[in-house]
Length: 543
Image 1: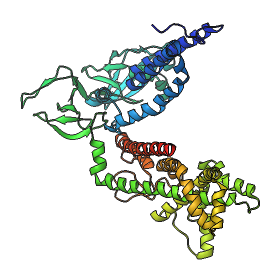
Image 2: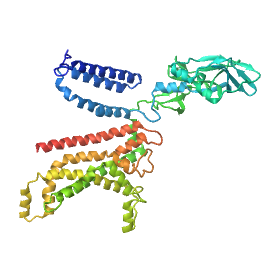
Image 3: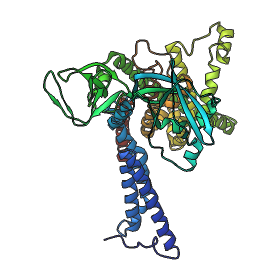
Image 4: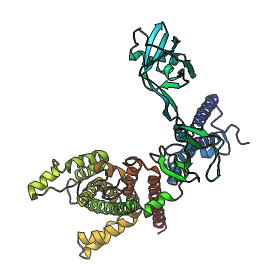
């Protein structure tokens, strides 16, 4: 069957140890799969099952012997690239958000757990100790008093230590003329036995059922909703609504159903039509292309999206152009043989690339501070101006391009330094004999010969800057905000930071579905850039 021991793996001195290791991996992951499946995380359970079972087959099969060396890379690509991408695209077709996180079953349970104060009202509660471990529960309402017989209570510590499951216990109350004369137990005594008190139901002589509703209160609480398992027949229309998701309001008698279009429970009228407001919390449902339609039709989303998309393209293109121009010029200067101390200049100019980007960004954030930053102090001293770097959209975008150029030019300079070595010196000598100067040589020889091998790298740099989340998040956090946007959007946001803000910083609740739709569009753009890069690389090789 192809599962016999493969050479070099299940043979030799430590074959038993390898078998033990594989067995442990299978058992641990099998247990994790069961837990994930039980918790409703079916996608993650399936992913773990596929990756682990494929890995075991690859490492135990003779036919797959050669594939074991590339399996870790393929598994990593599946787990960290393909699966998150597919999961994100799947979320884009749902209403998954901060208000629609749960499943329908979980939302049903939350509604069923809701209670209301029924006939009987609320009673003040006191606890009186009769003997060791036995207490009398005393309740009062206006001029009426009720007590229980001495009850043996269980402390919270005993419940935890003995891992007890407290079943609901009904205890009868009897009416008395006055409360017990013994000392009232302190509040900490009630707290230390609260799990027990939460599990009991006190029954008055009128058969009203009371449950604990606070440390000093017992109230006649009843379930607000009842699930109608067998469905119901509507009186007005005679329509039959099948169960089991129908809930009846025990106070008003109204019926409500889950609206599978909005992802909320709503009340229905006599004809079965949804009426009234939606009841939170919501549940996750499929909405088809609705999130993509919102991007295309909702003005509060479409206009900021288009503005941010245009800025993202401009930012990525300008960053590539500025870093390439500065990096190429500096590389040519460093290569100039007449320049003394070239090694020192090379080290100094590469330093911005050696410093972690997030440190440089935070330093620049301080330098560009509108009130106390050194840059504004210098500009104010020389020209009497103090630009609003963080509140004016144009100045904020200029600041971002300045900082990103500083961070990116060393990379381009290093690339050009290596490629300049490949240009024959004979070309420059022949150009000099024709009377050409350094500027003519730069534009007529250096730039054309460097651009061809640089093109795939420039496309890759464009794709990187297209998703340069760290720079925007640390420097401006997308600000200043776009006026009139219905989602969190700023004039300096890139598509990736805009997506992040929708998903995690929305004032009206995180909208993961919309953010996933925008992330899917970003993937299509970056994927197209990757294809262009591959074609350019292939064309470069065949040329």
